[in-house]
Amino acid sequence: MATHPFLLMKNIEKSFNGVPVLKGVTLQVEKGEIHALLGENGAGKSTLMNILGGVHQPDNGSLFIDGQEVNMLNPRVSQEQGISFIHQELNMVSDLRVYENMFLGSELRNKVGFLKVEEMCEKTHDIMTKLGVDVDPKEYVRNLATSYKQLIEISKALLHNSRLIIMDEPTTSLAEHEVNRLFELMKNLKQSGVSIIYISHKLKEIKEVCDRFTVLRDGERVKSGSVEEEDIETITKLMVGKSISQDRFIHEHQFGPVSLEVVNLTSPGLFRNINFTVKQGEVLGFTGLSGDGRTELFESLFGYRKKYTGEVRVHGRIVKIDHPRKAVKAGIGLVPKDRKENAIIKDLSVIHNMSLSSMGNFEKSGFIREQTEKAKFQKYKEMLNIKVHNPRITIDKLSGGNQQKVIIAKWLEVGADILIFDNPTQGIDVGAKQEIYHEITALAKMGKTVIILSSEAPEVLRICHNINVMYQGEITARFTGEEATEEEIMNYATGSKREAAKIG
Ligand SMILES: Nc1ncnc2c1ncn2[C@@H]1O[C@H](COP(=O)(O)OP(=O)(O)OP(=O)(O)O)[C@@H](O)[C@H]1O
Ligand SMILES: [Mg+2]
Image (cartoon, rainbow, N blue to C red):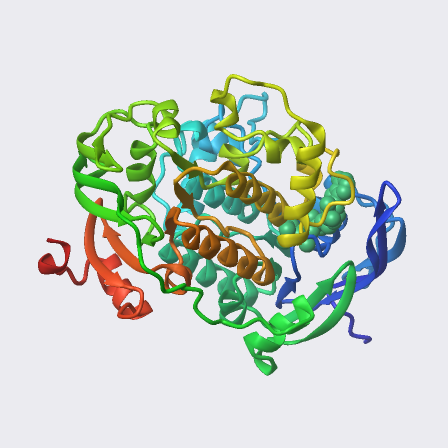
């Protein structure tokens, strides 16, 4: 009996509006294998998966599933073939309940056509428990945090008896323990013969959970191989085409005066007794696990949340920030996390998304000069290597990472004195991360105050002069960039250590 791979995509070609995005890509995935699909932002990963999921039709090439050639794929046929797709962008319907989202399009009904609500809730509950998620199946999705939405998206794929699961950056909003659960689950699925295609920019994850890999660059396959046989540096080099250093980016220089001082900031249930100061020219990091309160803290400082007590001083003056407008007036800018939900306007062009800043909304003049706009866009396009052929197309046509780059560009341009970046490099490839770190360092050098919120300890270690660690709404430790280590940060972020003296 001839053996065949579970999936073979052969010489796949795809162009959008005459621009080739996949130039004859071949991908082979065995049964019971976890296969990493890697590449820079815009390399073509999601497009290739959209073809497998039946969302896009290829212009050329052939596709075999379990040795059989499949000619017409659409989302339904793809699902019938046992392929489940966890999309990069979340596809939840906010106004539906958790279980309704889970069973959307495949509702369970009894003989006379009534919905079997309890059974759907039970099934939802079972899968969620396996993932370690504690959520009421009858809760409305709009009330859930983004990480939960991502977990529901994953659960949905597990609902069907899949033979192949595509996971397109499933862990971007997950906390570490949630990621670990997912990995356990993936390993179990693999044991039972399910194949998984795994897309992520976090190369440590790839090392941990994947068996083989394929690297795409500019729509072409660069290499496939065994994960065990390559180190992270080599894989990075295959993706980017050059070596990327893991050096720290901290620029040592004299800080200016204190720009922001926070005294005893407390918001019941979210954070308490927060005290810190940050100076002009300083890059200050806040890290911790999800649920540590850092996002809520800075949403309050930016005026999105009003119910807090304590004092905020900007350049020595007490300010009462109860609306983003006031924050902006005080010279504070916030780049929110979770791009799709908070930062982009889908129906607007790339270039307008970049020039339309949240600040712009508050400015009196609505007149945008096209030439400056274009020049600015060109500058960031080159600096951050934004892959877009025509900046007039709507932003949702850009790859996930390239959308994020546009958002970052917009805020680099805004010119606030105090810039807060929440999870800035979510979904960004290793090369572009480097550029963003350069830009952040440059802002600090210019005398701006930069605050970085990140769940990734290695990230704050690389770019911050000083680091605050949070746990359950409190600052549990402060480190200078030199003294901090990943391990020590973890100790304080998980609450297994607290050092009162340090947080004085
Ligand atoms: N519907 C579309 N219309 C026009 N161009 C598109 C469309 N979908 C994707 N593209 C383009 O195809 C290229 C590849 O995009 P794709 O989403 O496959 O990248 P990716 O490898 O998934 O990147 P990322 O890591 O940023 O998610 C990009 O240049 C993108 O702008
Ligand atoms: Mg993608």
